[in-house]
Length: 211
Image 1 (cartoon, rainbow, N blue to C red):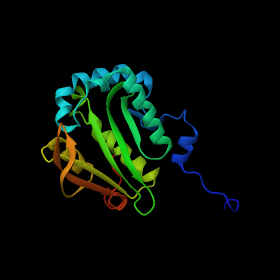
Image 2: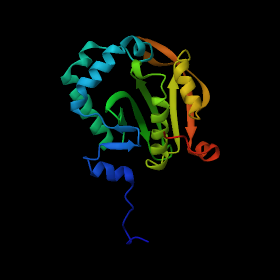
Image 3: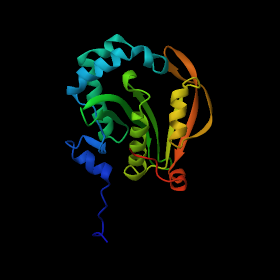
Image 4: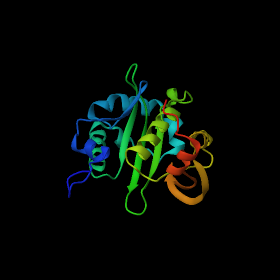
């Protein structure tokens, strides 16, 4: 037992107290970490060549978002949200060549009686369909339940986004229902299908693969 009046420090808090620890999640194949300013070149190039692939599923693109200054502001905001325990934005890198593959965000982290979060993700077009996002999502699921100690993960996607629906179902998420005009995507309010994964689902079905 610890000394009276002391509290055990979680891995999440330790990572905040050690800001140099940018590699939050990794295995032999992938490195998932917070975005850094030096990532601008890779990020801008991958997003640009993937624009037609990503645009139907994302908020309307603004060309001003692709300036280096705007990217640096986003990196600073990501760090502030991470430090405050609000959200964790992660870039997905392939360790063999440190190529940026895409991103996944643990957002809307809620504590108290909720203990849940919302995830979102994107993958560069040339890297899609190769199992990278399935592997990264498995790693993030393990991190959310084991390190953040949350109870529930939510994800919402447009009904026509069959690729994303297959990914969520393959990863163990359960369909809950339709959210009408839930998010403004590609310039218009669109319905979304809500999916969820509970920590108890993982215990029942076995841990989600992480590689």
